[in-house]
Length: 77
Image (tube, rainbow, N blue to C red; front, side, top):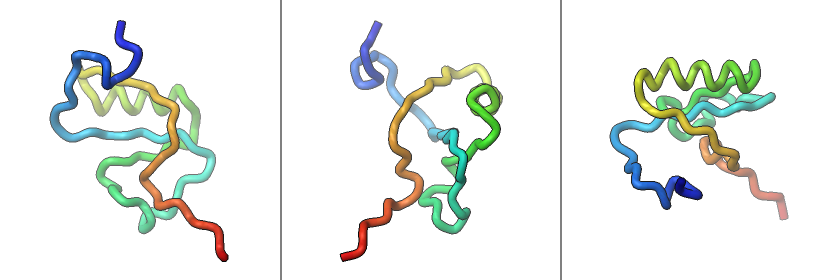
């Protein structure tokens, strides 16, 4: 089994959707790609169910990483 997506033989095709599990979703106008990112606040089970529903018969992967949907704020100074 591949250690990471890059090492796998899978190749990403078509549009990607990203379901982000969070306690505090960002304001809609601050999201870089609102058609790609869905922010889920009611738990991991709900996030996986929504991702599976959106994926249909395709594979759903779960990753832990920093979200790049919203620009990071730089400290003042």
